[in-house]
Length: 70
Length: 321
Image (cartoon, rainbow over all chains, first blue to last red; front, top):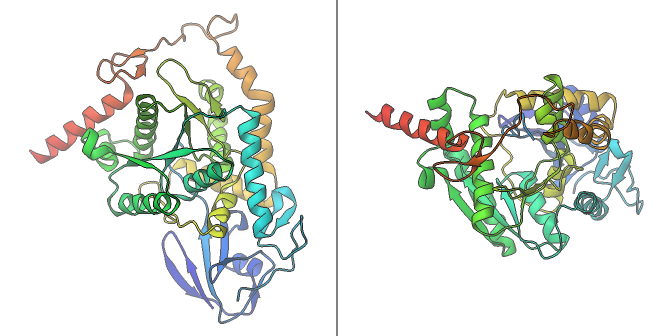
């Protein structure tokens, strides 16, 4: 399956079937730091992914100017 | 068709679209949105952030948090306008503005724009180069100044920002690492209005950024996904990664850290820093007076924003000569 990654934007090919949880583990990604989107739908960590799925792994960490102060 | 989850929504037992380990819960689309609304409602009520009829301006960046906040405030019945600050960070700022504009137009909302280059003569990259300091510091300083000045000038009662649980936990982590008691005393989801300052509130402080991002995806809110090119490698992002590693091992750690501080530590620290207290630090009473240039409150003659702008403009002029 094609897996879109961000920051920087790039695409990798991963063999299916697999689960979202296994995919994130194989890419060394923390499930707390990303969302996984198949097509345009959000999926949970137990969802099973097939070879023909278009998967986006979207990071959710952002922000620079949160700074040191409140 | 997307893969269906075997996880069930905690509320209705339909297939879940998101799992939140911190809450030990899974939600379908409908009940996840209800969960987000409830967290924001609780935040606003708990800290009396916004009173009925007050004018609210949302600090809008075009990212997930500010757009989710604007949408959630609307869902909860608050009539809020948006303010976007153009930072001049090349294509990134242009795209961010486009997302903010598209959201406002799609919902018939009012989006104000203050462009730093047009109205103040400098950009964030220019300021960072001129001061030889991290761009995030110049960015935060500029946005805080512009949002506050705009709110006061245009009669808004409240500035609402999209700081979420992860932002606040990371800031707290940094402040605790340095035991910076002044910053700890000022860290709060609702800072009251004072002479020269509008009230500032953070209604998303109970929602993690995975939740605000999921809210946007589910509600079909397009936002700027790419990270600011100037933020890469900054300390704040490093703290977030550390805290997420901890969260993965021990779900709920971030919320426990932040909420415990707010419930048990912040007020005693703030009270001890109040001038006049027997145990207040000596010689640290800060008296604010109007900036000689712009009138904003400052402990010196000229405020930090005006100093930054002067250095950035001087740097630009010098580079052109």
